[in-house]
Length: 132
Image (cartoon, rainbow, N blue to C red; front, side):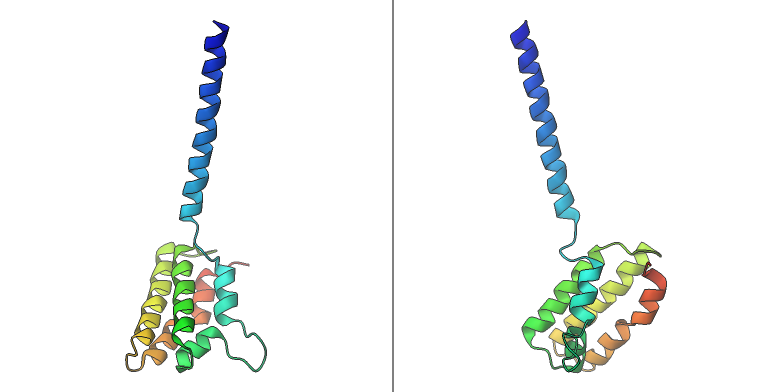
């Protein structure tokens, strides 16, 4: 009888441990690669006062393919994040518009940089979604 109890407890413990591992794996799968803060810093912060931001380089056409791809990767991650405040659907719509504009730049479409600059309306997005 005691062997049955020990076996039952071992099975229960194994079940609990494996369930926790699956939940941790699901959590990692849901989390975006970059946080909102990471995206803002990498895309919009100047490395120094004489170097343009990554976003500025893409907008002006001075970014190479790798830099364009990096900006796209950052904004895809931004879309997967949740806004600090405001409507989540509006957040996804704004960031998806930016990703589409970046793709247009990558495709060398005419006036794509201007369209990207319009899509990256920092003030409007910060007013609607930026937390404290």
